[in-house]
Image (cartoon, rainbow, N blue to C red; front, side, top):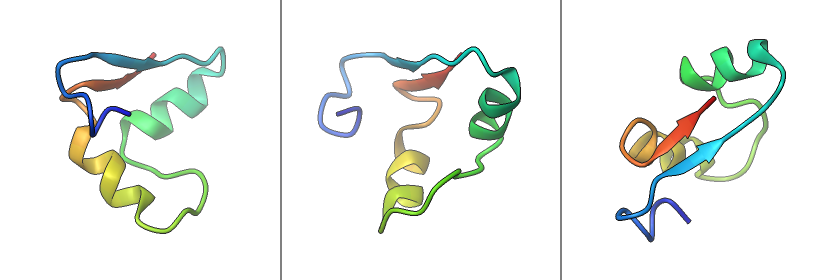
Length: 50
């Protein structure tokens, strides 16, 4: 969604601070084809983890 709607800010929220740190650090926690590239293109622009 973040890729197709750059005008909207998306926040991924989790109670596990360790997971959020991993996502913020660029780690991809599961495999999905091309997912790492997609996340990398929007992370810090309109996709945030908290």
